[in-house]
Length: 279
Image (cartoon, rainbow, N blue to C red; front, side):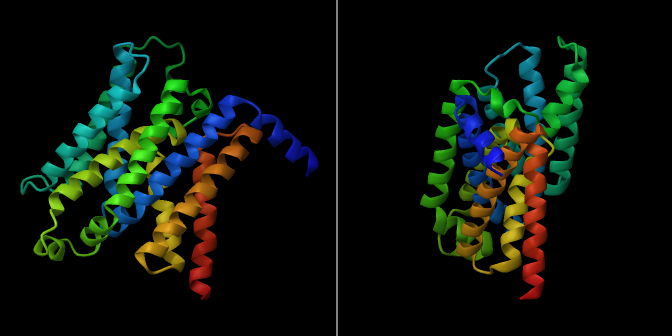
C-alpha cells in the first residue's frame, strides 16, 4: 500500500499529470451537470450524435493539417448542435432520425477522410484512440489546458446562473412557456453547452465513450435520490470521483483513460442500483 501511495505521489510531481487530472475532473463535472437534464428530457442520444460529429470535425482538421484543432472542432460541433435542434422540430425528419443520420454520416465521412488523406503510418491505431480514448489527455498542450479550464468554468457558471430556467424546462416545458420562459432559447443554450462539453471530453474518453460520462452519473444518482437538486449534486460528486479514480488507475496500470473512467462509472452505477433496490 505504501508503495502505491509513493508511486501516486511520484507521478503527481509531473505537470502533465496535474494538468490531466485538473482538466479531467472539470470536464467530468460539466458532463454530470448536463447529464441530469438530458436524461430527464430524454435527450441523452444528442450527446452520442454530437460526439460522432466531433470525430468527423477532428478528421477534417487533420486533413488540413490544423495542429490546434480544438477551435475548429468546437465551431463545427456547435453549428451541428444548432442545426440538430432546428431539424428535430421538422415534421419530415424527426429528432431521433436526425440524430441517427447525422451521427452515422459524421463517422463515415470522418473515417473516409482519414483514409484518403492519411499521413499516419498507423491509421487504425489513430482511429481507435480517437474513438475509444487513449492517454492523449496526458499530452495536452498548455493552450489546450487553458481553453479547457476556461470553457469548463463557463459551462458550470452558465448552469448555475440559469439553474431555475433549466429546471423549469426540464420538467414541464409547456408550463415554462406559459409562464413566459423562452424554452426554445434555453433548449438551444443546452444544445450548445452539450456541444462544448463533447469537444472538451474527446481527449478524455474518445468519441464513442463520451455519452457514458454524461449518462452514467445521472442514472446512478437517480437510483437513490429523487429531487432534481439532490440528483444533480450527487451526479457531480460521482462524476468527479470516477474521473479522478479512473485517471489514477489508468496512469498506474497503463489502461486507456476513457475506458477506465467508464468502467468506474459502471461499477458505481451497479452499487447505487443495489442500494436503490435495497432501500
